[in-house]
Length: 123
Image (cartoon, rainbow, N blue to C red; front, side, top):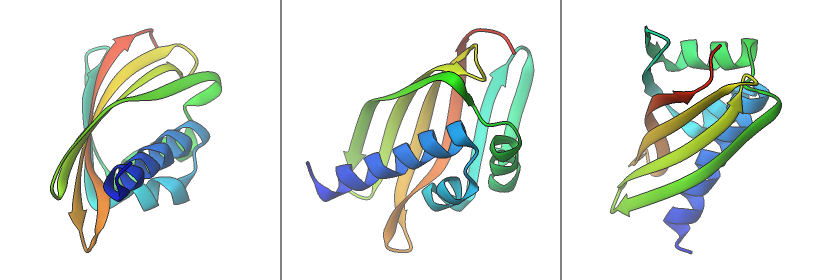
């Protein structure tokens, strides 16, 4: 495995652990300070900055014992990358496909964007 793939995988796992357990330190390490989150669920559009997303995850962690997440794809091209994570059991019943954009900024890989598709369950 390349050092880039290892680092990107580490950041994605920080997201999985941070969102699942409500760990702000892990989320803050993984995401760029200007990162954004977008998606639609149950007719509600979400457009969150980093502070709002981290606050949401700390206040309402996704893992209630049923959460399973798997990195299904990572594509790297120089200093830019995209990745996909499949999640099931988020907040107990929800499923998502998450699309991440990453790039090297300030000399290190960082997640700059997450766009999600709500693929199952209701909240």
